[in-house]
Image (cartoon, rainbow, N blue to C red):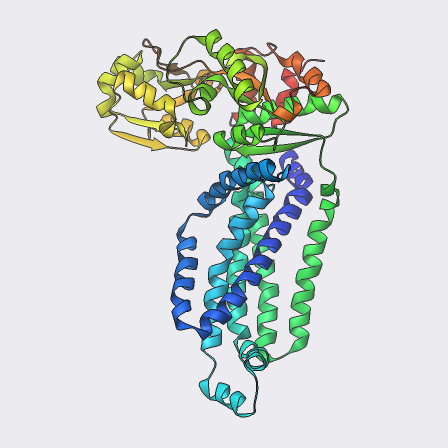
Length: 513
């Protein structure tokens, strides 16, 4: 068995267990909400249209967006709970994922249930009335049994949708089979990507077939098939969730990471140092930039690495650039004052946004700086990562240089570099600590107007851990210990096409005793 496949199987119990727990919980809540609504809607045509329309409207919201929207809402509610009751709740991970997936599961169950109940032959309903059945008796003994096959068809659809959408819960901090996919795409570990897709598809197919057994039993009035299908579901879910028996014992520290290779490596580096200090550690990876900082400030994660330029522009909303040391000093004071977040220090390297081109293309167009790029921009295509064009940094650069590109396209970071090499982009918003710049012989354009702020990599510590001696003592030796050359080498060892290493292995090359 290959090392990558072996690593994938090693992670499977945890990823699968959380994926099943999340999917089962969301589907169960969806049933609890949908069936009473369906009964009410089937009896009242006035209620039917708005209920179905609202469920349909929710379904039009992309599942990833729905998951992301719940996090800030729950974070605000948690803060309100703290101020009113003295304690809050976790707004990261399971809860936002559960609520979003529950809403996503409602439409197929609701629509099929309404169709099934209203589709019962009127003559049968009249016969039930004729023998003196109450409305409750008619519903439970006549309408629901006859509608059961149609309802189960909706449940099957909801189950498949929910299991598939659960893979998107990773960016809000929920462990799932999506961890394979997000991490695999970023590091070009196609074994992880295929493994995650196959595991999710297999889980959805297994659930669909077992629910299909229940549906067949309901249609043929064969109780044994219904019992067999339900028993299979319960046993399968129980076996999958069993490895999570430890989840009631949370790790001492939670290390966060955004969704690119350097972040995975640095998270592993910090986790390793904490584990060597005797602490238990869990990881929350693939977080979006805004989610990561909010999670830290709220105490949802204990420590992660961010970049001074990101914090300066996106968190503090600053547009000026007073210089590298002034930005670091200003951030250290303001984040502590405003949010209680401690800036432990810079790791020693900078990972700035850097506009890069293929050397041959830059030479042919005589482009060496962003001023030169502005001259040729109307003929060129810009490739950026998924968030750059919506960030303040892009507005600052565009405002300074008026970069009127012919076309702007966004890519997942790994594919951004491939777009440049393949000619789908002429210039990209690269990262200065990325080893692929040197490996691909890219030219980094100078920024003569100083529009791009400094991007020192800094360790951020949550307010609740700002005076934690074990964490501080374990991580302080990392401050100033990593050169940009060492970081580029570590990043490239994970990102390169051949002889890849894992982020944990790359982290060991940066580790000091």
